[in-house]
Image 1: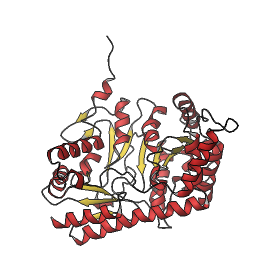
Image 2: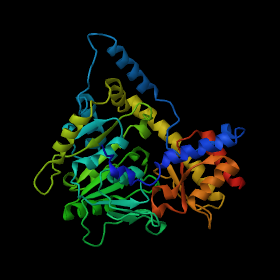
Image 3: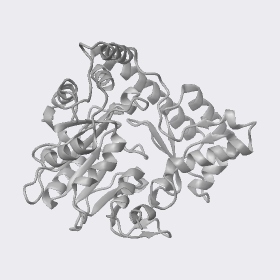
Image 4: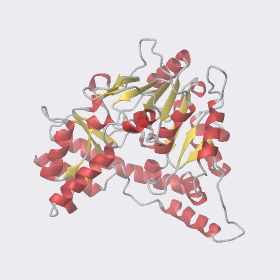
Length: 409
């Protein structure tokens, strides 16, 4: 008789956002008169439509697919050259970072790559994560059997190194002070969920640590487009030595609204090699070619349009729209007496829940009393308990209404 992968059985409960969706559905069924008035600022899904220049590129690519002379079948599994070359030039060369087109791997989104990147590392690789953290980093390693046993009392995995990010350290962890045997370090900046951003010197310290200890940094830069401070790095490859220790993952979902069309990419430099000289770039290419048939041609053409002059202008306008929402929420909740973080250079607001309440209790109170939905901080890890995440990706009306309702409490 067959056996299931027992590592999946170790996962505690459902995926965080699935649990939130289930609670909202249950509330709606029990309160049908209030279901339509729920303000949803939990899941970070965008609400603005695709920019006109991106839609134009989609239509033109669809027309190509209707003509035998320009029809495209399977996409190159690593991505079309026209998009990889544009990414290397605009996202990295323009910032003084050395990244080549053949080091860029186009995919169907950052979430997939964040989950799958662990496959090219050894089974006994020890991971280190910031706490709180985007759940996919830990969950994907649980599925791979790399995290040990789960302690329900603490919410910690025995074989994971947690780096607490609290208000005391500005929600930014520093490299371990001890010689911890860490192989894989996950960093995300601007951070999901706390909205924290990292300075160039502090990021350089992480790069130096990884090179010194033979570790690899998986750098999730999905929200880099929301950085407005010119002193902050947009890419880890702006740091000296990052090519030999870092993998960077990016998304088109939040900077250009591709949550429904799905597009992202991962950068693996050729300089990144293990202790035996094995190039991780080649392993990722092998994995990509075996398990992925390439992002659709029409979506990659749309991705190329993001970098056009019109595309940059239009997507910047959308980013400003969401950041204005962030300021509405940040300023409104601060004025209401809440202790609030993030919302500057990042589209997430991280607020301290009232004393004496857990983050899930605060979730239930907001849903039941004022029909506002956010994300309980404990869902991102033990250090997230006592906090609550709100997203700026809703409409302006929903941001204003959420603040008004929360103030009414």
